[in-house]
Image 1 (cartoon, rainbow, N blue to C red):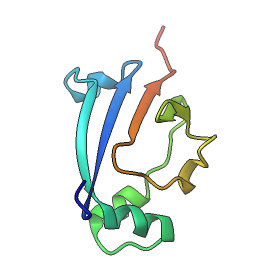
Image 2: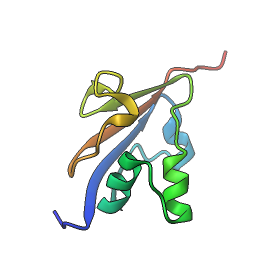
Image 3: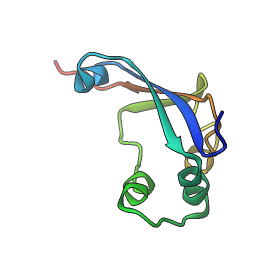
Length: 94
């Protein structure tokens, strides 16, 4: 792990993968400073502002390392290097 980067695995399911060319799993790196600044409610760039304004939409189940994010403190959870974030749509057309 670089001290400046957090490596995360993002997984989409329940149809969300269709928004990402049917690719379910994505490995990404984000600046670790974004994570700590989000936690403290501070932002300095447009990218950080966009991340800060993220909110879970109704109908999306969020898991952090296979645990419901509500049990992890929701937005208070501080990301760690190697975390896996799973986003699953529970909304289905009919």
